[in-house]
Length: 255
Image 1: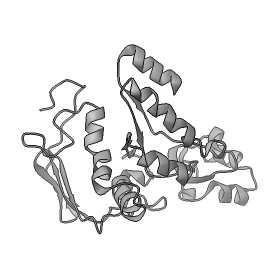
Image 2: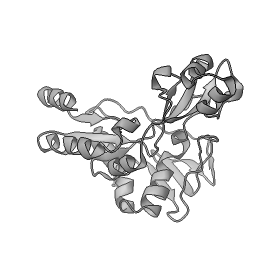
Image 3: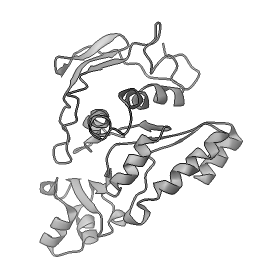
């Protein structure tokens, strides 16, 4: 983190720390150290971070990430497709192997690694500099539930239930703050003349339904989605209209 902030400062560019988290039991609780390491250099330079609202990460099956301590759920396996959705520890016990040996036998494949602690996640997600990201991969065979549920989860779990921030702060973390940090001009706020990217939702009903076992599950409470002034989601389903645009590099026109 020191190196990243120093390099960005010397280069005169903003810094975004992607997916800020403390992974692995040996690092749990260290957000008490890392968050001040963001606040201190932020006095001299532009620094932001993003966070996804889950304690599990997702990537390919890798034996070096299997420590026999954290839970690992197999999201897909080419040689053993029937193991999708099962915990690696259970598979290893059934096969009479170590978890690392089972991981190798299941490759190529993917997994969700429950390597973060909820207390750290709460600290990061409530920090004023943190933006919300999904890191969802739409072409995964069995995606992480963040692909379908990340943003409604922030509103349901961390705003409505846990009251970590106000509704306005929650929305800002998912819209205006991201647009500002990534220099997406005329986006992220409701203003006359700006791009009309809008989501209408019921604050009492909004919630994620996607789970690790059933990740491709639509959230509840979203009433209407408008992209560039065109309705793309209404009455519980997507419309055939496509008005999205590729967003260009900072400073370029996005019209």
